[in-house]
Amino acid sequence: MSKFDKFLKETVARVNHQCDYCGNPIRVGDVYYSEKLKDLFLHSLHEKRFCSKCYKEHGDNLLKVKKGKRKPTGTPPLERWIGDKSTWIGPTKCDEQREARERDWENIWKNLVSAKGYRETYLFLMPAIDLFREALSCYQNGAYMAAVSMCRASTETLVYLLASRQIEYRKGQSFVREVKVDHSLTESKFGEMLAKAKAKGYVNIELEKQINKIRKNGNFALHYGQRYDKELEESTRHGVPEGWIGMEKTRDVLRDTSELLTKMIGKTFIIAQDILTNSTR
Image (cartoon, rainbow, N blue to C red; front, side, top):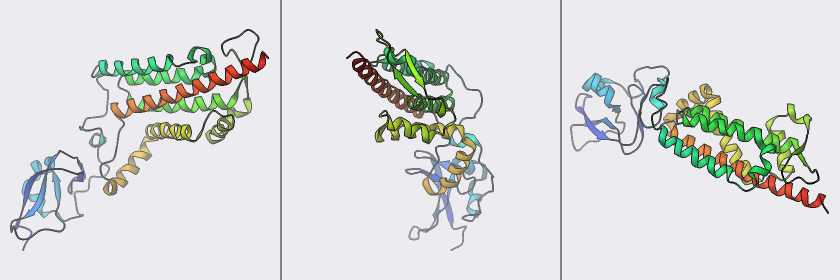
């Protein structure tokens, strides 16, 4: 049977595919065109699949494309990989979904500042908290990649503060007002600071995993060129790549970071109270 004894059937994707002509992702729920044999008693072991855009442009001529010989497109445009819908990267409409984002950041911020020990430990953890406030501002304005980058900055600053500062007691104080700074850590790598924070009892295995998760998302944004190429390379083996961090993912990262800060506020408050109690005996 020749290749012309085939036709392209309109199909709705139930799993992720990739167009055999342009390389675009075909996501679950998308309409695409799959190669079928006209003889109902025969089935192709290597049927090709084409996105609706390519079908609209080339029609049944796509049947002449050999498997693995798709149109060379170089690096696919960035807009192919953004969220659930294709959009152009560029200036965003900051007011689009602004009300929903403002509700999100208000709830996240409210939970953080209402944490037990927040006021008492603010001066100790202030740089990390201020960076997190900046992350929320980025999210509020729809700058999602910037927001996760700031979450990473807040998290790494938090670890540095925990590793490099020692709470000191001054008679009559109820807040953390005095700290001794270990300046030898100003040039240390993150792994060294994390080890010091763990040794001081601030970070356990569970919190270390949470820290690494936040940093990983931040790394995706900060090293986007490498991450983008890596995901494109792996997309044929693992399905459609993430490609860009959107609103939902950013909200999750913000919540993870807020939760981490809240836990560290609690630990710092307990340590400060122990120092206060031991110093007054």
